[in-house]
Amino acid sequence: MRRRYLYQKELINEVVLTILNQSSGRLIQERADTSLVNTYLRAELGNNGIDLGWEYAVVDRKGRVVCKTKGYDV
Image (cartoon, rainbow, N blue to C red; front, side, top):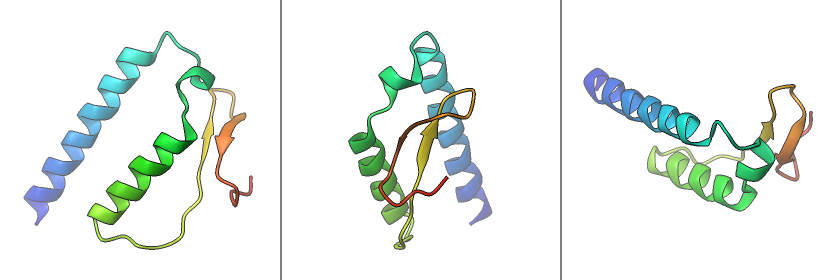
């Protein structure tokens, strides 16, 4: 179980680093797509057996909200 967790953690780290490297020249407002974020989060949480309500916000480097779900409260 631990080995699987570490493997999945490393995969996530690689994906995040790739995304950061590829998109570092674009503003977060250009990269944030609420519908895609919702789709990816729902799929990944569901794949890991997590079925509960959640809210999120995407913020820029200064902490300003770029996009958020309807129920997210800053």
